[in-house]
Amino acid sequence: MAYNLYKHNQAFQLESGEYLEEIDIAYTTYGTLNDDKSNVVWICHAFTANSDAMEWWPGMVGKGLAFDPDKHFIICANILGSAYGTTGPLSVNPKTGKPYYRNFPFITVRDIVNVNIILAGYLKIDKINTLTGGSVGGHQAIEWAIMQPGKIKNLILIATNARFSAWGNAFNASQRMAIEADPSFYDDKPEGGAKGLETARSIALISYRNQLAYNKTQSEQNNQVQDNFKAESYQRYQGKKLTNRFNAYSYYTLTKVLDAHNVARNRGGLREAMAKILANTLIVGINSDILFLPEEQYVMKQFIKKSELFMIESDYGHDGFLLEYTKISGIIANKFLQNKETIIQQKKQEDFSNQ
Image (cartoon, rainbow, N blue to C red; front, side, top):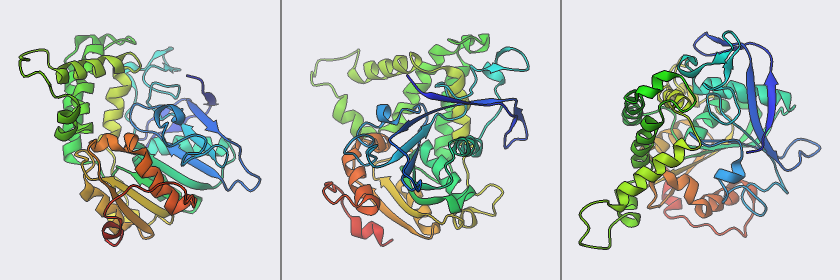
């Protein structure tokens, strides 16, 4: 995967008080920045994605799509702790000359946002027309809009929340337990914890979809089947697929990033924190999402002043933020991009936008 790399050769202080001696920031841009720098779209990616938004969000980023490089200057940075170029557990610790592995420090969403802020400074971006993200990308977007409210004009939060739930914590704890149960995780080598990571991914997939989605796509058509079910093959395949492109140390680190997400921390509460957001805000929820419940979208709508909420009907659960691109792009086009030719496929819009 090709990306740009900015090497920030200064100490970077984490929210915990610890420091990284230096950080690498991998990022990808599309399009051209206009003269008044008013066409910036900053996309914050989700859990195991990367800076190439065209790769993992192909229905949303590209010519003629919601985020069009012919119209917008699009930026996406790989998140701190990840496996795709930005400093993470497999990066070399300057103090030891060896990769961090399990010694990579505890990081938070706010640390990730501060890395984005450093990159924005390097790119001489002083205002963002549209800041968006789904899932963990939404965590970054809402934090950034709180941390630098005057910099963000439009904010799009998709299938996310302002505080990660106990339900989500339980899923992540189970995934970490799976990785911890793999003895090779303690070997501190690039492929360490691979079998545990396969199991962790299998657990995560259950939260990304739902019973309806599995029954629709993985049910057996042959009534005689008694073993080797499609659903099991799917889980094993997806687990192996992730281990071929990611590592257990970054995965373990990033589950803790999700767990710690809470915009209320040291800000007086959710209401006080979200009241700081000045951007025109579009919140998109998915009615069948069991990881980021629709109720959590209502909380954000309640506390963000200039916000609208749209709820998409989908069979895909949380993964709908990646798969329901026609519906999402239609809502975005109608709200922010004034592209009236885009077909809007949504239901109950009036009911939800009046909440």
